[in-house]
Length: 382
Image (tube, rainbow, N blue to C red; front, side, top):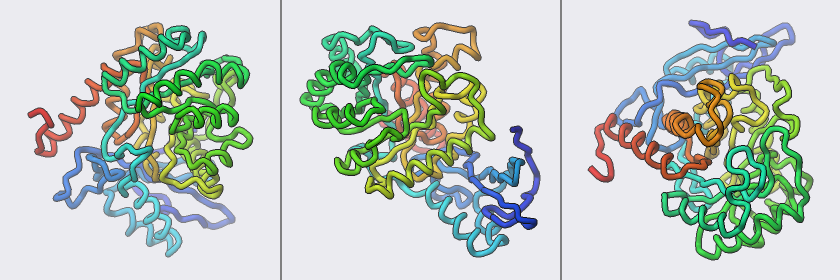
């Protein structure tokens, strides 16, 4: 569905009843994002980090129509009051989630960005399949990533590339558990990249501290397990399953459809006993999306701060980069990978899941230095 841009709001933000039995839905997407200056009264802080926003795109779904109206951030509440007390309350709640500081996640401060190094102990992952299949090779690569600046090591044993076939739980555990155990004993923060509850349980027993679930905690027993273990989780959106996800993916409006899906998963997890502060979300760039969907999502990263939790993003070496370039192979997409990561950081994304840690660190350090210079500050090494 094509969005229609309007100069004026068709209805007040968060008004539900639009007459004739119809209803509406509203989302707020920060725009005009720059380094936050607390002396600038037109700005609001973005997720408590170093960026702020001065304008908002008010996205309204009215029946089958999606409209977008841009306004000053400070005008949203006054416009919402025209829709009544309920609309005003929901507008304030959405703005609060956009602006409030994030609690530390798995011990990492969320007013800063972090890099998460990918270690796929598989023979068939889309980019590095086979590179880390041997445990000793995986360990060497992981240590190099830590040396380059990775804060998290993400260890996976099942390929989720398009068309991939699932592997058995025993084989997945055989691949990842020795690597997780060794690296955790060395004192590193480990994430287990798995969508299967029995594997999650064993990974936590072997020292993983985070579960990164591309399935969005939909597996039987996953939420109950993490609630019992009180383990941080990353909830990713994926339309379909790896074997089918790229077969004609469809959305009414990809960014807001994904927002609603993630919000439902967060609410389900919280209701089951997982504290919101233990959750992060990933919109799932490349998982059940066309290249255009992926770019719409990337352009909308500010929207996802409205979920009130840290944002994880994995664009590294994805096929969309080659689609909009010259069709490069996965390992030849470094420039596009760091460019997209830099664009996402300028929308306040906190965690970046990458294959190329050193190069991503270099890009993000320079993005942050530019932001500090814009705000009149100095870089740590200035």
